[in-house]
Length: 327
Ligand code: LMR
Image (cartoon, rainbow, N blue to C red; front, side, top):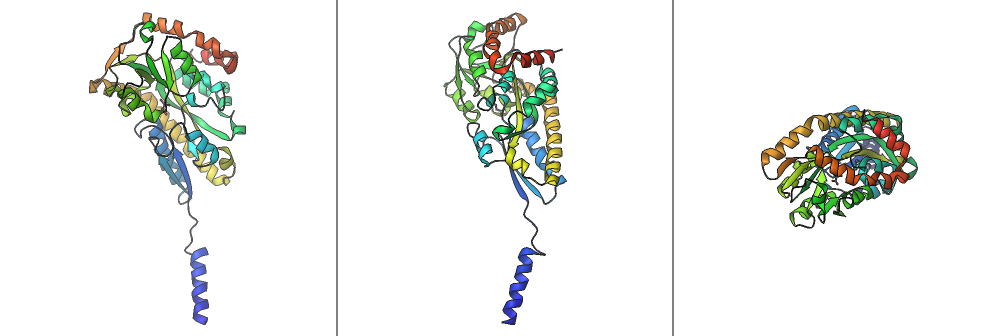
């Protein structure tokens, strides 16, 4: 009897006392691109930094390449609490806010530096915090880069796009953008793009260099046009309720790790865009074509009505603020 009691006491001690280190808080960070892209690198950096700042307290599990959730599901999963952090493209927030559609307007930003200035402006920061009531906490914007057009025919003047099927992200602005040049846009999730291009479900698409290279789109497209006609950036977001319920020390460590990881990813986006472009060219699968100013002006003019079409939903003030960031 005595012995049993002693054993019982010892095992209780082990379970609740000495031996029982609280298990680390598991945080799932899911995204749809490859580890080598700016977003992929930032996610891994976040894991490294958060686990260093909060040793034994958190375990960050990163799921790249749509392994956990593809982009049709990830937002819903975040709101349900099945994943804690995701970083969708700004084109994929249409269900939650119409204002973020601004980032899809064709030929709005001159370059990534202008996008960066707009995101840092008071208007940009306000957008970051605009979805709290819908259960979404915005941690920060993250860059990928300017988009390039690709197709199985060379695209010079905008009339060359007539009748072609283009894969687009789930964005009504991007739908209008391709319709403006007579194209036939189709919303397809990122994980299915390669196959859609390979099997001819679509004729062309648009993406920044890092995505083109890491997903081998250049192997299933004959031409890539250096159009830089729009931006593909992200917002890193978390489940707002989950975030609000975290202890202050964990919030602090995670916030710091997040800010640093975004900075790291953004640096990669600025510095490595040219490298991915060079890799696509070196692979010699798709032909990379420059676009003349005259041709680009043609696309700009053809797509200009898209701004007016979405001005009501986005807000003219916001569009003006974005234009100011070009200078
Ligand atoms: C796409 O669907 O093309 C992109 O949003 C993928 C990504 O996350 O960069």
